[in-house]
Image (cartoon, rainbow, N blue to C red; front, side, top):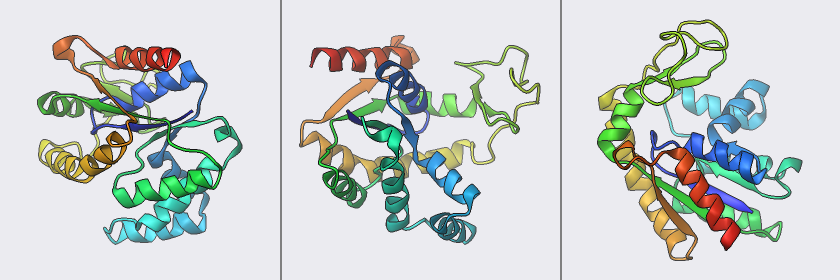
Length: 219
């Protein structure tokens, strides 16, 4: 079962993907994690990505595609995966088709999460991160036990520099502009399952994950 997670920042993709990972026994593959691993290990692709990032430029699709391909060819993906953060445009979606076709596989399901924009902004503004272990908390939905101190490290939590309302709005505008064609691409194949995640309707990530698992069991 090859699943793609889609949804803007703040919709709870990571939470839902983690729950699906546990329920379906599939690896959760985040493109952010792939980039960090390649950069940390100093791979050729990681060096190229670092060079572009240092210059403030977007990493070319071919670099991202190669990193994703290498990760999907690892042993833990032989029975499927939950892919988070890729594809972000039509060219990447078409490349993913080619990557999977080489293994006689395909995309089986696209889970598209949606949350009202004002709620996304509120959530992201409440996000905090442990500078030591990198665990992410939310002062609304997932508070640490003791103020703004990490439950695991005892270190004071910090706020990401780019978690400002102005920068978030720019990221959201870019996301919706770039990914709508991708969602349409998969919708035309009948692969998209839309799930709303919103406090306003008392429907959180755990509810969306359960809905997806129930759907797959009954499919």
